[in-house]
Length: 346
Image 1: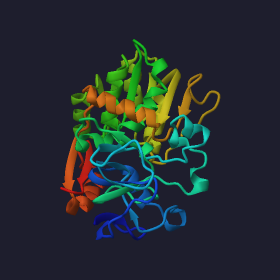
Image 2: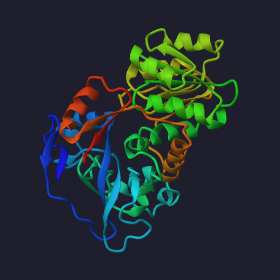
Image 3: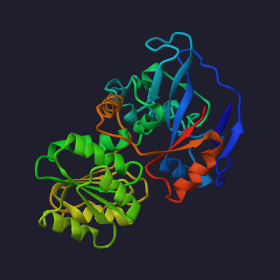
C-alpha cells in the first residue's frame, strides 16, 4: 500500500510503498477514507534528533476515518463495512483516567509504549490503518468522513478546552480565540453552539479573520501589539472571560495573559513553545492557566453529535495521496483554508 512517512530527521515526508498490514488479535483493519493533516506533524518533524521520541520511519496522520475492512480474533462491537472515525490518544484502557474515557491522560501509556497513530504508531495517511482496539472507533452514522475526520483532533481538542470553561461562559461573557486556522475556526463554531458568550477572533491573516467572521465570530481583531487593548475596549475594560490560544507562541501567549479578566481562564492549546508566568501580581486575580491535551472518548462522541446537528462544519481542502507531500508544504506556508485532508483511497 501507499503511505506517507517521515523517514529521516529534518527531511520532508516521503510517499512510499509498504506491505499491507494485517490485524492481530483484538485489532481492527481500517480502509482509510480520509486522513487529516495537522500542524502538530510539522512540529514533530522540526524536532532535533536528540529530542525525537519515536522510531523512524513513521507513517504520519493522527486524524483518521474509514471503513472497517477486517477484524482480528476476538473483536466485538463493530462489523466489516462500518464507517468509523478513529479516536487518536490511545491509552491502556485500565487506569483510572482510561476507565473514565480520558485516554488522553492515560498514566501508563509511556510505560507501556503506547502511542497515538501518526505520533509513534503507524498513522492514517496510508491506504490502510491498524487500530489497536475497537473502543477507539466511533461510528460516523451518516457523517461524511472527509468533513468529519478533522473533528477527531481539530474538533475534539478545542471542544475539550472549551468545555472546562463553560461554567464561566454565561450571558455577558467574552471568549477570545487566538488563531483562526484549523483548530481556531472550529473553536469559534463550538463556542457559538454551546455557550452564549461573545466570541472575539484574533489572527494576523486577513483571510483567516474573514473565515472567522464567516463561521460566527462576533468580532475580529488583528493579532498585533495592540490586540489586548482592543479586547479590553470591547469588554468595557474588564477583559475576556476565557482566552483560547491555538498558536501558543510567545507573542500570542503574552497577548492572552494581557487580555484575560479577573477569575478568567487562559487555555494554551497551540504548541508554539510560549510560556506564561503565573504568580501573585503577575496576572489578574484568580486567573487559571492550563495547557490541555486532545480530549476524551466521550467528548469525541459529543463533537460528532454536534456535527450531525449541523452546529459545526470544518472547512476542508482535499488532496489525493500523490499530493500528500504538497499538503504539508501548503500547511507549513500557511496556505490552507481551514484543514487539509488526504484521500488515501481516492
